[in-house]
Length: 298
Image (tube, rainbow, N blue to C red):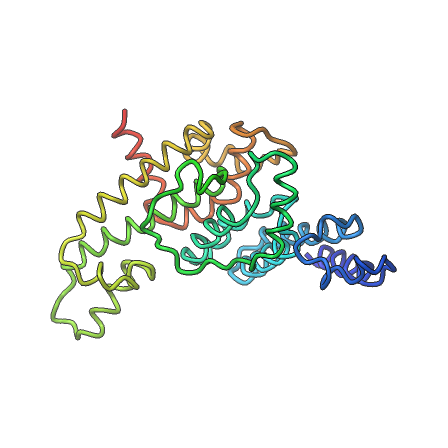
């Protein structure tokens, strides 16, 4: 860890001290959004990613928060995200319990960043526009909506995002099921304590929805979420048939380190598993719920 931090400090000092043409001088201030387009910044970005990888091996909340902060700032500096660090971001947010931030981030990236299906000229124009857009501007999107299965307003939805969204929906579902069962809590508890216990059971996102918390029956919303999860599961399977088997047999795939992968291939599934697995296993019942859905569809 110390070696990674020292390497980053060295590269940052070197980059800040470089004598470059006026239009790229001080890229930390003058080239925000197009950082990777300046060749001299790339060693710094690689060193920063090396520190992120080291932080992700540390099993503390503080290390996960530090890694996430680095990733978000790397995307702020390089809005095109040439290194693909956005794929690591959802898993860290979910591990930190930042489900709403994760949902907002996914929709922000899909709506406001590059479309890989565009032609080259359109990409260049779009990159210039994206650099002028506010960074991570989406807040408090409706997490119960569902209009992004295979793409969102024409944007490509990759495996890391699909799997993260599926886990978010599963967490919402588990919270609603817990809410449905909360009638079993002893009503003789003081009202303040009763509400606190119930809020802890359902999670912060569900607890923030007064309309849901005040409803006597959650069956309609539960069925809606089950449908959304099944659709996301089908979308994940269409995109990469290896992900669900890899998730169910994670031990055999967590230590592999593919240096390259193809979309839809086993290596992609293994990488995304490593980005998201801790968030999945830290959600009791999530993997077994997916297994149950799979059995029900056979």
